[in-house]
Every structure is written in structure tokens, then in C-alpha cells.
Amino acid sequence: MVAMRQFPNDVPIVIVAGGNASRMGASKPTQIVDGNMLLSRVLEYARRHSSNVAIAVRSADQAGRIVADNLMFDQLPGEGPINGFLSAFGFAKNAGAISC
Image (cartoon, rainbow, N blue to C red; front, side, top):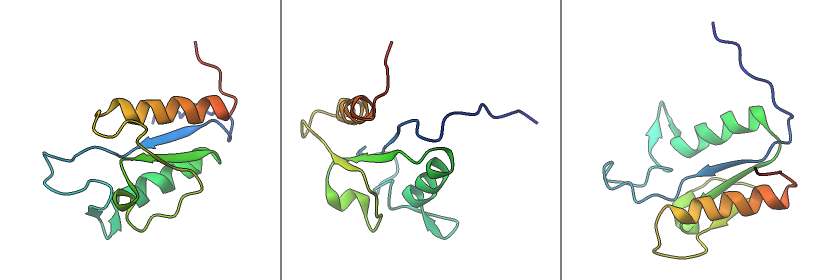
């Protein structure tokens, strides 16, 4: 068994879920896996590791029925995956994270 590294429970976590899902044929966040939306499952896992979790999506409809305290939308619509990283870095910076 691999030991999990312990992090402070306020480390910022951003779930980048704004992709086109062109290979899946439907929105990834709202796909059902074992009876639950994929995004719900990932959010539940992230919340077990931090109290400071955000979700980055293209638009509100992509988040489906998910309720999140920190829901972020693309800053540069149509520019691709870089939007998720822009949101993540902004969220981490506002949360007081230090980047190297």
C-alpha cells in the first residue's frame, strides 16, 4: 500500500473541467459513473483533501447540478485549456498559495 502524502487541509485545489469532451461525445462533468456525475465524484474526493476547492468550467451549463462555493468560468472564451490554468492560478494566488 502506498502512503498518501498529507497536505494542509486548506491547500487550494482547482478541478479543471472545462474541456470539449470531443472524444467522449458528451460533457465530461455531467457523465454518470456508478450512478453519480463524474464532477460530483471528483469534487467529493477533492473535499476530502482540502476545504479550499474550486471548479473551473467554460460556462454555467457545463457544471450541471453541481453546487460549489468557488465556480469559475473561462476568462478568455474559445481559447482552450489555458483558461482552466488561468482560473487555477488566480484562485491559488487569491488563496495565498506561493508559486515557484
